[in-house]
Length: 339
Image (cartoon, rainbow, N blue to C red; front, side, top):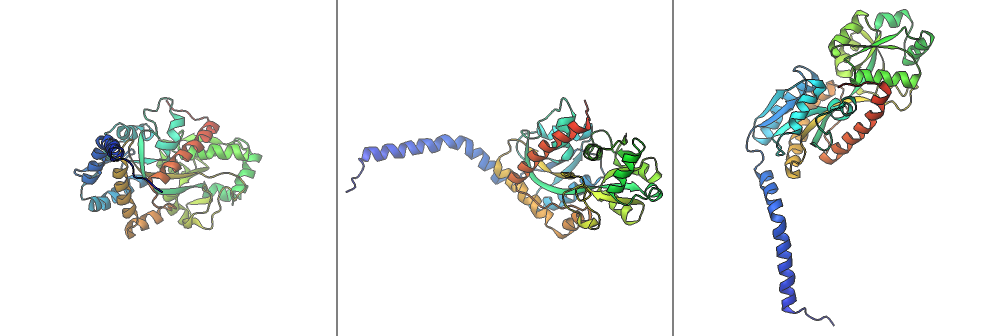
């Protein structure tokens, strides 16, 4: 038979519960109030690269969509330099309130930590991931005249030529430590070939060098190379991701071409400052995820060759951690280092 607890014991239990609840209110109330009011002023959206590129274009497109969803202006600001570090660091050190965002990328959050000896921010601890926006394969493209002259029709042919002619092939990239450079060095290591790397001041000059025959091949962003491939100005040999691109369904992957474990791509996504309250991050995630589902944005992402859709903040955080770990080995293989 159950007995009733003394009234004094009940009152004591209730009092202890009330005290415990009150102790959490000073911490919970401000965050909840901030999330309820957010956003109450314009949002700053930093692009850590110059205007005009795919990342910048997409940031501006999304800013217009998110403006309508959140009811506040989203002001895009280009703060380029140091491989994206300047713009990323600005957001890393901003107030943790969700009003400062950055369109981070594989460079700022996965590659640069291993390239720069004194990176001014921690790519994991100093940011709150919101959502990935795009994940685009790189594609190995070759100078058409060189490929035709030497009967190179596949990556296997390229590797065979390089082994028969060590040191005679060269490849261009957008610079030391760029995704194109790292892809080239990984190919050299995995295929056991000797080819020369020529770094240029950006992907566009590297592409021009390829077209003019100054370089023999390069790993280029699919969005940038797709029109050239379509017009027959460069020859596509392989894409760098684990599966084929929907834009180039007839072009095999590097792994399908015989190089196992080759899975590299270019991605970018939205981050805010680390420590931003989770409800604020959730609001931003919903706004950007909804924007990415709008027909014109989806079409733009498809024309870029993007294979990604929106992610939850938790899933994106895990993705970034895995990418950072993966590129540690790749940067080490490349021997690239920037101070």
